[in-house]
Length: 502
Ligand SMILES: Nc1ncnc2c1ncn2[C@@H]1O[C@H](COP(=O)(O)OP(=O)(O)O)[C@@H](O)[C@H]1O
Ligand SMILES: [Mg+2]
Image (cartoon, rainbow, N blue to C red; front, side, top):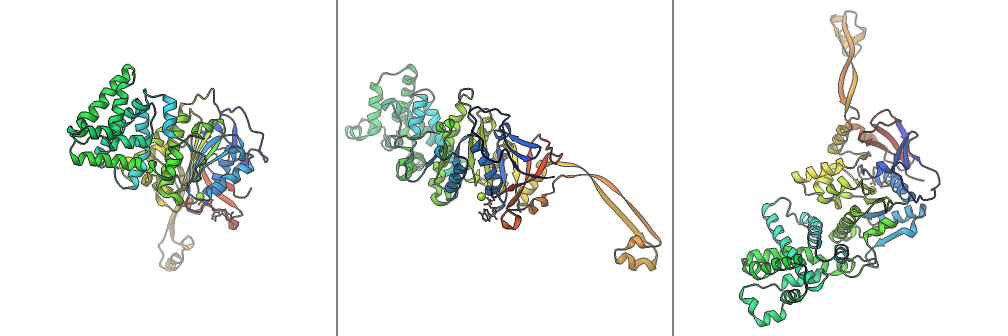
């Protein structure tokens, strides 16, 4: 049942320019190929720290994607991941395609401009931007320990989203573009009382008022005319009549979101000009966000989730017939980057030929990463169910081991049983020594029981080799693919070994 992992070819082949779903990427055993079709159904790699996720299955899959010409987005949690991907790219002749988005801010992506250029002001723009913020801000809310299911948290969030919706509409109607500093200026200069709207001094100083006048003068489509009416109602009737407390909490919630983007590194990376867009992946670029969470904390996490979301939305829209190059989304220590949207993305990304690979220690990391409540549990189940190839490395986490064991399922197994009686007093000492089968007057019986048992018991996952010199540089993994029978094992799962050193 132990397969050795077979690379497709010893040297990296010439990169294909056409990709078929039946293209073979690697082999789990001599008879078990893993194809592009399998890859775009998603991959999950679980194992304890030091079990060989990164250097075993992770490295094998990454190299196979790169040598097959995939483009991709790499999110980073640890500072050594950039060097690791540089080495993968060097080995596979892909260094020229590697684009590093890092703290030097040489590569920049103005995400609002990108959205505007894509949709044009008007149709869909406002809702897209609001949804984008709402998804990316999930991370901040979770980190702050709020929002996750709290009723009042949800109320303020809805208020802040409405505030943003109106600000986006107003700024885009008035100026034809949208930027985070402009949104902030509108929100901070909106009228505080109905009387203020008529004050000359306020009118002169308020950016919000200035935009209202600009937008009024612009020629508008009937839809824009309608939207402008809604915006005017909000700023002239609704906002100044909110109670002081309500208004300040909504404003604070909004500012909590925007704050990160109006200063420092994130402003430079995401709110200035654009030198790279997520679409570059479609032409074979490998975009690595070198803002590892361990080093850059929330700023790194936020930047990567923002880029990931924009990548997901852009790649979902592509026309595969015209742009068929497979793309991968790679997240080691994936619990840092998961959001509710991943679950939706994963249900449809197969059609867009995106091979998602998530690596993490255990199942509970995902539920904790998604907020730790019942909704998070459901989202974890949905997300992981849509990663069709699961690779399990050595793990001591009982939740993960039971989960993996029950995924693989049960089968009928024969259990041998036997019992014996030593009736004769003289034979009692034999029984005491466990030699009851030697009893003269014994009544013994033996047989087989057919029982339904887990094919792979949870304890099996604690016994897998974790690589390093002690294991001859081999890392064990149990591969499970829903609906697949492995030729190498004759079962729905296969124990295989990944070589750490090429
Ligand atoms: N270059 C190396 N030299 C020595 N040991 C290594 C090397 N790379 C990995 N290992 C060992 O292999 C094991 C698996 O490492 P790694 O793939 O980083 O695990 P994980 O990603 O699951 O945390 C660890 O015990 C690690 O110490
Ligand atoms: Mg690792």
